[in-house]
Amino acid sequence: MAIQTVSGKSSKEIAENLAIIFYENAADRDLKGGNPKLERDLIRESGLLKVLIPKQFGGWGESWTDVVQIVRLFAKYDSSLAHVYGYHFVNLITAHLWGNKEQQEFYFSETAEKNLFWGNAFNPIDMKLYARKEKGNFVLNGVKTFCTGSVDSDYLIVSALYENQDHQQFIAIIPTNRQGITVNEDWDNFGQRQTDSGTITFTNVIVKKEEVLQNGLDSSEFAKLRLNISHFILNHVFLGIMEGALEAAKKYTKTKKRIRTPNNDSVTGDPIIQRHYGEFYVQLEASKLLVEKTDTLFERLWNKGEAITEEERLELNQAVYTAKAFTTNAGLELTSRMFEVMGSRATANQYRFDRYWRNMRTMTLHYSIDNVIQQLGEWVLHK
Image 1 (cartoon, helix red, strand yellow):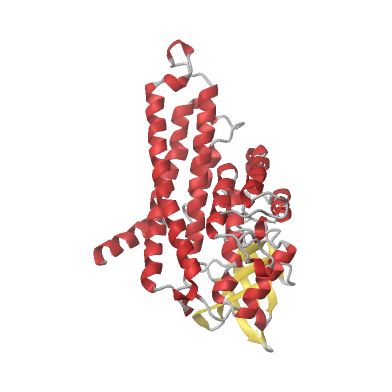
Image 2: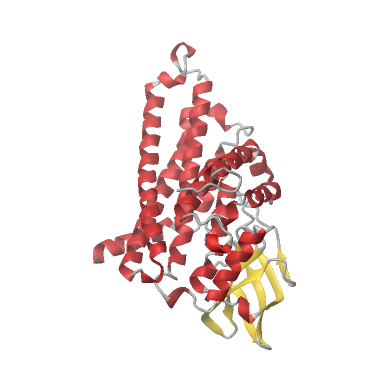
C-alpha cells in the first residue's frame, strides 16, 4: 500500500502526475533520442528514487509492489523512463543483496539523502572489462555495453573479470564521475531510445576496496534474487507498454472514421474491429494475471530475506519466466496488430504509434524468449 509522502500525496499520485507530463512530449523525445535530462530531474525532485529505501535510512519504506506499479504506469506513457526508473532499483538493491552491513546502510542513506539516480555497467555476458589489484585497491580497464541509465547517473554497478582469472567476477559500486570513466552516450537503437543503454569506457579507473561487493550471486538464495529482479521489472514494463498501446489505439479508433465503414459511421460498430479489440483484451488480461502473480511471490520472498529456500526461489523463477514468455509474445502481437484497428492513416510519422512495437521489440531481445521457453520446458519435464 502506497504511503503518504511529506508533500501529502502518495507515491502513486506523484507518479501519475509525472506520467502525464512525460506523455506530453514522449513522441517527440522518441524521435530525438538521447538523454531525457529534464524528465530524470523531475523524478529526482519527486522523491520517487527512494520509494523502496527503508525509513530508518531516510526512504519511504514502501514495497516492491509499489515500485512496479510506478514502473508500469510510466511504461504506459514512456517506456524508456520506466526502464531507467525500474533499473535504478535493480542496481540500488545490489548492495543490499551482495554487500556487507556497512555498504547496505551507506548506499541506502546516501541515495535517500541526495536523491541519487543509479545506472549500470553490469552486463554479465559481454565481458570486456578487467580488474587488477594494485596497492590495496583495484584498477579497471576496458569497455562495458548495454549500460542502461548510465548517462546522468550518480552511481554505477560495475561487473568485470579479474585479470588472468577468466571465470571470477569482480563486482563494485563506483561514482559515475570517477576519473577515467567515459560514458559514451552512443545509444542509438530504434527502440527504448532514451534509456542511455550505450557503452562506457574505463581507463585506469581506481576502485577502492570498500567499494567492492564481496558476497556475490552464489552467497545465498536471497542473493540470487538479483537474477529474478531485472526480469521482474521488465515484465511490468512490457505490461505497461501493452496498456499504453491499447489505450492509444482505442482513442484513435473512437475519434477517426474509416472509408470501409458503412455510412461512414464510427468504427466502434464494426464487428471485425470489435473482434480485434476482444482479442487484445484477452491478451492483456492474461498478461496482467501472470505478471501480478509474480508480485505476490516476489514480495513474500523479499520479506523472508535470508530465510528463503532454493525451492521457493525456483518457484518464483518459473513464475517470472512464464510471465515473460507470455507478455513477450502477447505484447509484440498487440503492438503490431494495433494498426489493423486504426488503419493506414495511423502509420503517419506524426503519431509515432510504431514506438510501442519498437520499444517492445528492443526490450524483448534482452534475453532470448527461446531460452526462456526451453528452460521452462526442461523444468516441466524434470519436476
